[in-house]
Amino acid sequence: LVFLMSMVEGGKTFFVAGTSYLLKDLFQRVHSHGAITPATLNIIVSFAPFVGLAVGERLLWLGVRSLIVSFALLAAVSLGLVAQDVVRSEALSLALLIFAIKVTWSPLNACISLMKLEAFATEIRVTAFSIISTNAKLLCIIAPTIVELLKADNSAEGWSSGSLSMYIYCLMASIGMSGILAVLIPGTSGDGKPLEDFVDNGVRKLLSGTVEDYGAAHDIWGISDTESQNSQERPSQNSEERADEH
Image 1 (tube, rainbow, N blue to C red):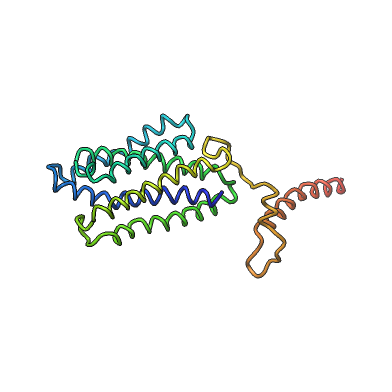
Image 2: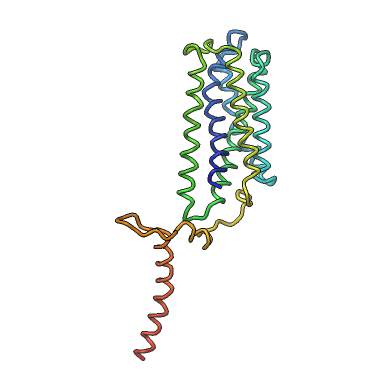
């Protein structure tokens, strides 16, 4: 489950980070062919995440998995069109497609966060979150690094048409993978189920094992079992002592 969630979160993070880093170059390149400035284009598309939140909130009844797949499909189709040199050379078509891409950012982030929240019990939720987030940040670092490796120089014109299209297809594959893997996550996490506080006893025993404790490296699962047993035994011992006194 942690691996699947890491892949879903990582695919989304790679897509968002790569798209964010790429927008300035796309706007700079289209400026040479049109009258709309890159600043104006950036202002236009900056409202897209808010639109995405409003739309996603109204469609939450469909379930988080359906929303993730739908918005991932929208992002992938839009990226596929942006990868075409003819399409991204027109300021209006580029602005509309980038707007559609950025619309998906907020709903995807919110839905995946809901799935992470409900997929793990309280006592291991923070640990699972940290593992998933750390793995996703690695892809977040890689996305802009690839951009600089593919460009001939630091300017927007440093892109060749082929390398730019290839990178956009990589972003398309990344968000497509995230949407597909979200469907494969077992259970109903993210659909509003009650949060669990503790893991199952079978999982607890598996995590606890039979390894002896050394120094400060205590077996937190064994300690948790011992403390819960002690807390249950104390009331019974106290009641027996009171009975003896009477």
